Image 1 (cartoon, rainbow, N blue to C red):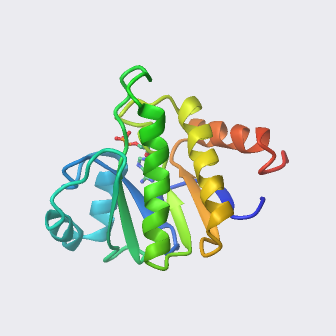
Image 2: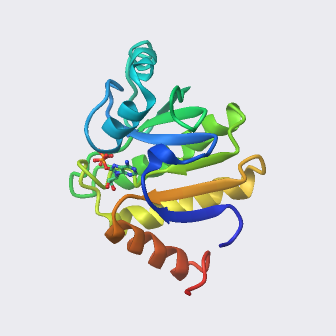
Length: 176
Ligand code: ADP
C-alpha cells in the first residue's frame, strides 16, 4: 500500500493505533453502531469524559482518552446526516476527516484509524463517501509528516470492497 493509507475489514475497537475515530452524534453521549461499540469497549469513564464536553456540531471533532481501548485517544466526530446530497453533506464529511486529523496532529497521535463515517445510520451512500474520505485524508497526509498511518477500518465486506476499489482506482493500492 502507498504511503500512509491502509485498509482493513474489521472492528475499530481492537485497533492498536494512537487514536481511533468515533462516528458520534452531536450529543457525544453514545449511540448505536460504531459509537456504541467504542463506548462498550472503552468503559464508562469514556462517557463521563464525553459528558464534560457539551456536545459537538456536525463536521467538527473532539478528543478524549481511550481508557480501556488499545488506542490512547478517541477522536469523536459528528458526520452529516444524508439528506439527498444538496445540503453540504460532502463538505461536512470532508470536514470530519480534516478536523479529526488536525486533533491527532495537535495531540501527537501519528497513527489514526477511521470507520466509514456517516455511512451507517446516517445514510451517506458509501460509494460517494469513500472517495471523499480518501481524497481528504490524502490531502492531509501530504501536508502533515507527523501522521504516519491512516487506517480505514471497514466493518462490512461490502464497504471494504468499495474502499478497496476506490483506493485501486486512485492508484493508492495495487490490485492483487
Ligand atoms: P453513522 O451514524 O455516522 O452513520 P454508524 O455507526 O451507524 O455511524 O455507521 C458508521 C460505519 O461504522 C458503518 O459503516 C458501520 O458499518 C460501521 N461500524 C459499526 N460498528 C463498527 C465497528 N465496531 N468498527 C468499525 N466500524 C463499525
